[in-house]
Amino acid sequence: MNDFAFSSDPFAAVRSAPTVEGVGFMHNRLSRDTEHRDGDSIPAMMAQKHAGFYLFHKDTLLLATKEATSRAIFSKAEAETLGADMETAIILGTDPEEEAAPRLAMLLTDEAADKLEGTDGYRFESVRTLGLHGMLPNDQLGAIAQARGLLNWHDNHPYCSKCGSKTVVTLGGARRDCPNCSAVHFPRTDPAVIMLVLHKDDEGVERCLLAHHTRFTGPVYTTLAGFMEQGETIEAAVRREVFEESAVRVGAVRYMASQPWPFPASLMIGCYGEALSSEITVDPTELTDARWFTRDEVRTLMKRGTDSDLPHTPGPFSIAAWLIRSWVDMVE
Image (cartoon, rainbow, N blue to C red):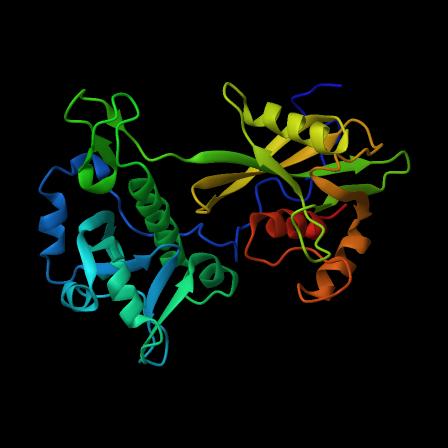
């Protein structure tokens, strides 16, 4: 069997990738324009009249709740009053739908966060909760994912990994430079493959492989996933991860879509894979169970909802749910 082409086209009814809707952190309308930034970019953008700021404390985002809907973007004057640490400011980009208004992110001091905790009109929410419950517009969630990943990287990598010296922020937060050895450091992104494996039996019935992971507390059945390794292609990573976790061998792999996952800095690369075998042996350190499901069986899981005590699929926020839903909606 050709490892680089599906033996029979399981996507005959969908020649291009289905429209990606409802998947969190994927939509970010900001224009980054990183290559045109210099050492004065941060103060210059902060000084602009319509500049807006996302304010973070650890893994949470500050929301203003005095209005009818929660607001996540603050003016510079508000940020200063609320106790933002201006030295932590980084540029996210400019908003083309708001007359190129600058958008930045920064951290609140611990003291400021303590004062705001429980204060009427303000609330801290975890980035994960914001996404899972769709508490902000999708395009803002994409910018928030960008901000959380960048701020986390700056907070955890203040020193040069080559010589140990203190590094400085450059390119508006898109890089850190070492003044001692001239090394340059870029924010990390950890690529991970997430795949729905498909198998068609001798009678032409197609099934997908879903599993219950050891880290789950509820009866969620979802796709397999895992981090890519050095020197590994997406296709090779899909095959390796599926075999390691389930002993199922995969041939052809098709990329479908990707999702930023800022916990802390992953990129989930969504794929379909064609199984060359069907016998399952789970890795007990990763999975408690793995099974083949028909479309009708998956529809039953999807209808139960994420609060069900019975086996169900993940909520719509994740690319795993999109991969599953897209397959279910395809015509056999």
